[in-house]
Image (tube, rainbow, N blue to C red):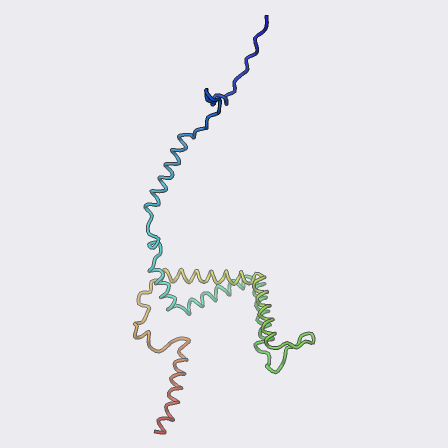
Length: 212
């Protein structure tokens, strides 16, 4: 009597096949995942719907305070930036030495060199234009190919940040003159220009009055 053939086991992945065609069915997403995604997107949409205008984000009064304080404390702000730059250079002696070397080179080779004394290097005479071009190229290479540029830029940015922070939070109050007083004679560094102009006008007017 012939023995019956062995029964083969059916793997679990074959249960997803359709009974009629024998093709596997497409996997369906987990309902919990779709619920989470939909709730997350709805929460994001509600949050964006409650956003404020971008114009309200910028405090225009702070910008106005910065402008007024810059006009009033400009000399003080320049001193602050100069102090920050000096401290940065003193804490980076290599950059300080490089800048001093460039300054000495400019003074000796171009700024304070006698006009009737040509620059001669290795037996070759250089004109003023060639000397200026060489110094400009040397300065550009030394500053931007070393740490000097990063030190200077970092110091200027730090000084500008300090100035802007003070200008934004310092309430001007009654620091400024009226329009009539502001339109008066110049004060500070430019006061000598007005004085010189008035003196020149008075000097020019005296001979004319004498001739009359």
